[in-house]
Amino acid sequence: MAGGPHAQEIWCFECYGEGKITKATRIHEGAEDDQYRCELGHEFGVDYRKGPATEPQWPPPAELAASVNEN
Image (cartoon, rainbow, N blue to C red; front, top):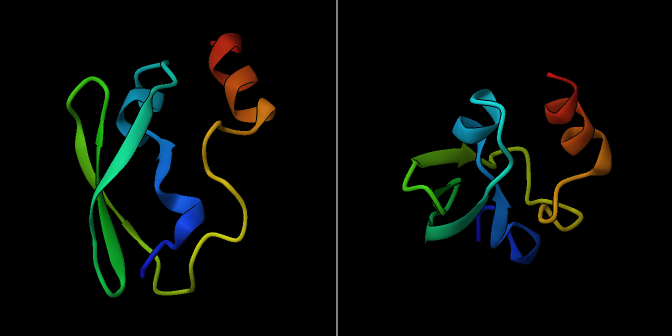
């Protein structure tokens, strides 16, 4: 239960780097990290050794979405 129930869906870090916000769904839940795949096919891992997410990770915070629209 690495990221916990609030981390079933998160925003894709790779797409964010490209100026887009897309949803990524957990494809593997590990003991300390989870693996995700986004709607555009990016796959990446997230380290949750400091504990699971304490609030829903999707949709992303308004500040995050606004930062993409600024660029």
